Length: 509
Image 1: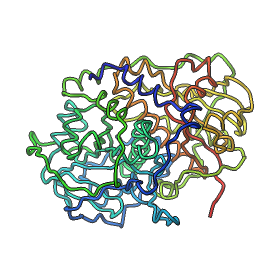
Image 2 (image 1 turned 180 degrees about the vertical axis):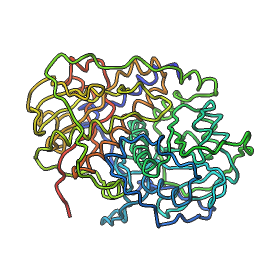
Image 3 (image 1 turned 90 degrees about the horizontal axis):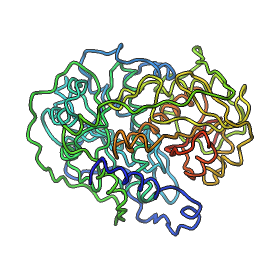
Image 4 (image 1 turned 30 degrees about the vertical axis):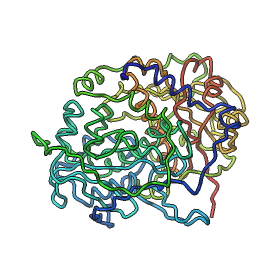
């Protein structure tokens, strides 16, 4: 099985599309008695509590989404309080609520499909002033770190990344990993798409939190999978590393690392039994990279990207620089997924802030040229002052919206979102579409990971931009082929990665 055999990714994507038969004639049901626990419990590791008193940056969220953090970088090593800040605003518990019959639910800082929270964060750190070098697991429920390994293991991650130089200087490296069963329980084989949607929203939060602290970040999606999985001591058939984030600079990794030995740590079972969906394992294994040389070759160049020039009516977008916006800490703490939208207008400046600020350059090893992305954004606009209702495509380099078809699409939007009225009641629906064949030809099966991850990260930024302006947002699922048909012929031959609805949330007690 090879990363270049991208028929595997095409097959996986095709077989996990939502169709009327797959949704309405499915016999799948949720076995609530077997629902997996949405967090990991190590039975033999003592917690290292993180400080609850966190820094406050007062950084406005909209500015944090667009600021170049490399110019703000602090040369000082991060403190434990800063690490706690980054982990809390990326994946910490922001609200706790008790639901009859389901017990206490812990809501997190970033959006997650089904609130199943299947992404765990690990970190490898240098020797810091108030934290010893080691590999740690972040426990969001106890708000603590649990040490897996003692010593500086950053060299393992640097070598796995084919010696990425930014990662080589990062005193703190975060590893996002997915425990597949937590999401498969509800979403079955389609859950592998969610692996990257939900790690993407966490990374969006992590990027703005690092901006608030003035810490540069480098996202790494190309690495030797076996090296990362061994370091955090997971079985990749059950849990696997998805992405790295190097945070900070000026702390060179040592020339060598201690040996990585199997730990065989005991973990409390997630549920009484687990069901196997081979499509997830096959897709993940087929997108693995096996040697640093393969990583280096994979990272070369970027695919030809870019939408064709607009040929129809164009509307210009402009940032509202003086828009009132809360600080990033307040925005993340109150962010949630809207459960009901008011049938009202948002303004064109508000939509401009969402689109322009969320599509700024991503500091990643798959970085595309400025103004170009793997995903194109298509919109169904229902209620935006200054825009006629209709179907649009966003041109990020020109910061314009091209009107493809003028029409009232509220009914169609609900049908595309599996009949969910949320999509009809929203002001705008944003669909992330990519030329999947082009991405796979360039990146192999690994390209499927990054196309989904980019969509999740961009959607995560849109969540934050919306909530910064007092709006709401929610991610929705969709009938894949019907979305493409709605935006064709412009979107012909593309594939849907994600759907985000935006509008004014209806307050609920």
